[in-house]
Length: 114
Image (tube, rainbow, N blue to C red):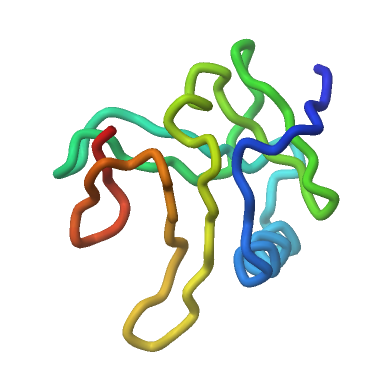
C-alpha cells in the first residue's frame, strides 16, 4: 500500500501524545493502524470514527511523521481539513473533532451534518 503525503486530517500535539501512549500499551495489536473516518448515525446524521483497525482495500495510508493512520478514500470529502484534539481535563476527557466541513454538530461533539 502506498503512503500518501498530503494530510487530509491533522492532529494536535495533545492528540499525538495520546495516540502514541495508546500504541505503547502492552496489549496493543501492532497489525492495526489508527483509522479516521465517518459512519452514518448519531444525532446529527454522521458520527466520527477514531479506532485502531486493520487496513482494508479501499483505505489510503498516511504518515504524519509521528504515526501512520488509515482512512477510507471516500471519507476525505467529509474530513478534509479536520483537526483531531485530545482533551484531558476532569470535566471533558477524550478526543474532539474540529471539522470545517460540518454544517452543524451535536452537543456531544461526536456527530455532525454536512
